[in-house]
Amino acid sequence: MRIAGGLLAFATLTATTACSTSNQPAHAKEPTAAVASTHPSETLEPLLQQALPNVKGKTFTSAVVDFPPNARAMPHRHGQAFVYAYVLEGTVRSKLDGKPVSTYHQGENWVEQPGAHHVLTENTSRTERAKLLVIFVSNTGDKLKVDDPRS
Image (tube, rainbow, N blue to C red):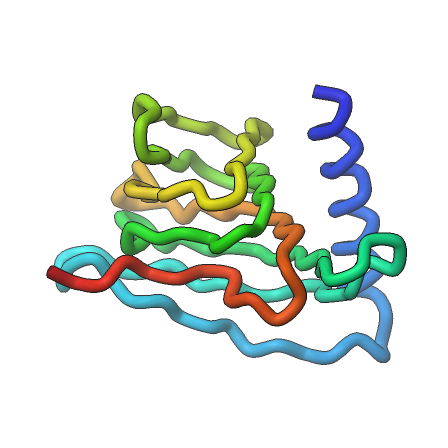
């Protein structure tokens, strides 16, 4: 719990710095593929990406993931990244392979271990959006999200 609180404090500080510093690069939203035509997809807006100076080969990335009403992400993995997710707005249902489905409300959080298979991530509302602050500690140069191949 102390680690999650520390990550949240660091993420909040870096997000504030990234949003308020004029020399930070502006990033466009990057849409990801939709599960089916009936569900909209999420978008990921990077806030800050920086090599960790005291951990060779690792990069810290913070991002806001926006789920429009009724949006669902494709099943995916985050490679060897350690992932921390904090619900900024709305309610998100999530399932990691081998774990039960969990529902997270505004102010709640979870972590994903390196190599975890994220089989479900969805906004539970048909009318309100949901937003996550997501922190990745990844191998420098790795993709942050790799969708499962379609069957």
